Every structure is written in C-alpha cells, then in structure tokens.
Amino acid sequence: MRRNKIHYAWVIMICCFLLQAATTGIFNNCVSLYNPLILKEFGFSNGAFSATMTIRSFVSSASLILVSRVFNKKTYKLIYVICAAMCSLIFVSQIFYTKLWQWYVENALLGFFLGFILTVPLNMMIQNWFKDSSGLALGFAMAASGLCGVVVNPLSSFMISNYGWRSGIIMLGVLCFVLIVPTILFFAKWTPEEKGMEPYVSSDKDKEDTEKEKLSDERSLILMTIIEITIIYCITQYTYSISVFIDSLGYDVSFAALVTSAIMLGNLIGKVLLGGLVDRYGSFKVTNITTVLIALSFIFFAFFKMKILLAAGGLFYGMSMSLASLLPGVLAKECFYPDIRGAVMSKTTSIATLAAALFYLGVSYSYDLFGSFRISFLLALLLCVITIVLSKKIERQM
Image (cartoon, rainbow, N blue to C red; front, side, top):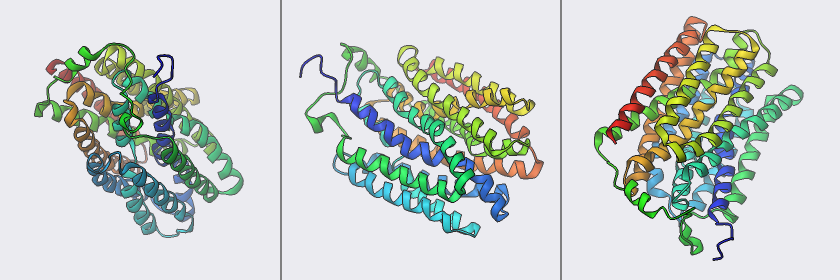
C-alpha cells in the first residue's frame, strides 16, 4: 500500500458517524420535541409517559450485555440490517397509538433491537481499526448524534408546525433505515483483516501501545469505572425532559427546539473537541474540565430564566452526552487489557443504561411531585462533584 493512500480506517470512521446518527442521534436526541405534544393530545402525566424511556432502557441493558458475544465479522451486517428495519417499523407504528400501554410495548420492543446497535458496536469497530488516534476517531463518529440533533430538530419543528407530530415521526423512522442499511452493506467492515489491512497507526507507537496493554484489570478499578460512567449516563437523562422543562417556564415549542439544538451543538462540539484532547492529555483531565462546564449548565437551569443563559446552559449540558459516548471506549483502552475491553464496555454500558433509566424516571416523577425541575438539577450538581472525585481516584490507582 502506498504511503500517501488514505487508510480505510477513516472510511470506517465515517461509517460509524452515519450509524451513530441513525441510532443515538435519532432515537435519543430527536424525540424529546414530540413528548409534550403527545402528553397534551392524550392527557398522559409526564411521569407515566416517561416510563416508556425507562422500559426501553431496561430492555436495552439486556441487549447490551450480548453485544460483545454476538458481534463479529460474520454476523454484524445481518444484525444491523434486521435491527434497523425493526427499529424503523416499531418507531413509526406509534402514529396509530391512542393508549399509554401501547407506547410501553413499543419501547420494550424498540429497546431490544436498539440495544444491539447503539454505541458499543461502534466503539468496538473503532478500536479494531485504530491502534492510534482512536480518541479522535471515536469523538468524530460519536459527534454524529449531536449533529443529527442540530440538523433534524429544526426540521422536526417545521414538520410539527405544518403537518403535525405524526409526520415528523414517519420522517425519523425512514431516516434511520436509509442511513443504516446502505452504510452497513456497502462500506462498513468489522476488522481490517476483511480488507487485508492492518489497523491505522499514525506513527511508530507500538512500544507505547504495548505499555498501555499492561495496565491493571483489578476489580476495584472496574467498579470505579462502572460507577463513574453510570453517573455520567444518569446526568444525560435530562435531555429527554428539556422540552418539558422549557414548556414549564412558559416558552413555546420554537424556543424548546432552540435549546434542544443548543444541547445537540454542545454534544457535537464536545465530541469532536474532547476526542482529540483525550488522545493528547488523557481522559481524566478532560473529564474533570468538562464536568465543571456541565455543572455550570445545571446552575443556569436551576436559578435563571433568561433565554440567553438557558441556551448557554443547553450548550454546556450537551457535553454530558459527549462524555457518555466517549468514556466507555477510552477508559476501556486506557485501563484494561485488550482481550477484556469489549466485555468491559458491554457490561459497563448495560449497567449504566439500567441505572440511567431509573434516574430518568425519578427526574420525571419529581417534576410531577414538586412542579419544578430545580431539586433534580441540584442533585445533578452533586453528581458532577462525585464524578470529579471518582475520576481523580481512578487516575491515582493506575
């Protein structure tokens, strides 16, 4: 292979970008605009309807445990195509619903299929293809969820305003299928061996990588890693309530879409920026600085109603999703042996998803109980402090 030829790993990064947009981008970052409209049309309480996301996350956590076992170079295409088709059909079917239990069933089924194609297989694919610069590649790929929110949420707002929320749901379902199937069938490769290649290395860093492979796999380190990532996942659960929060302040759906887009922009900027910074400075310093910005967003949300501060809070808060997407992969690479990284990512993400589902339910019911999100925002501030403390402890143990 000629030295000036672009390594296929960068094509894989673009594939992961599109797959991330079609999964996390659509189903996690583009659905919150529809929740207030469904609540108003059918008269559901916020807490009762929020249980749909809890059910989805519960089922997804079970699927996530299986990812490292079922994904390989022989099965990944079939799994992706089946899951993409099922997710699209199940998601679009909600346009016919009238009862709350129907949304519960939908999210249970959606959670099962979606769990297989969320961030874990993308992390694994990036780690397979990038021996060097994996943080940058992972950050770029994960940024798709934020970019999808920035681009698609205004389009959803347009569809809702002109054609109703059901037309927007159809648009999202079709977009998921169109992004995943051509990408996975014609461009994606699970390992470099499928193309007779070696993983990407920007320079001679074999010795450095060997040293990284000798890092600890002690149980206490695994436990602290699980707790830290779980907390970050819990913090991201406010994303689904932002539209309800903005609506509770008396603002319309257009401003809710603006704040949601600001969150997605922060998510996008965070992933692109943090991925490169992790490669240069390591995950611990980056985690601590980013967590401070996230804490600042909760201060804005809890104590201010000015539009400019709410939008700024959305921008900073979006970085929580950047951390949630990047940390499982980068901590697995920095802290554990290569032969257990996939299993650690699957188990950690599964536990974090399950805990985040319960946390989201608590946030929603706290609003029903107190008529305000302020108490839960203050709890999030405390979680940010705990995250920084854990990050420092993990760094000292390594």
